[in-house]
Length: 222
Image 1 (cartoon, rainbow, N blue to C red):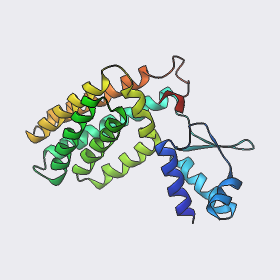
Image 2: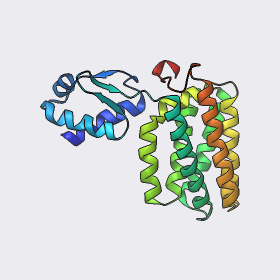
Image 3: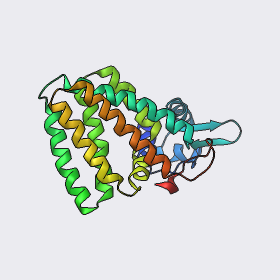
């Protein structure tokens, strides 16, 4: 049951079903899942180690609200991992993930043409997941998954794409990355992928409220 609670709470937080900063009641969660408070308490401790919740002694437990500094640091790691993934995929040749990436870009082009930001955001997430899966490196995938959980990426990408022209530019950057992968140019694929992640980070930070580096990001910005 503890694993069930962890998996479901992780899913809700990552998808943005629970807003950043929202309080989490052990009692309410125990009642919802039909368990005692012990597995809920242990589940929340696990989610705290993943960076998804913050436990404040004698205050309560809350969904983590990442600061600008934390977002910047996480995106720096995202850049390294996805750049490496692009290089590794370029070395593998025509693997199944390539076909999936080509299909993804066709659908992304259509979403951008329709100005369907919600659908394009889903396809952005899928593009990056396919890229990492195509690298065929289990250690890289494990680190990437933990990073994406800490970022709660799906709730951040909408802020990035809210910047004028960002969806079109992002789609164009994805095309260039795949072209370089198909050309088996690992060096250039890594370079362009890292530039793409940096551009996404700039767009995201531009969409956040103006403030100091400790300012927190909440769901109202998505």
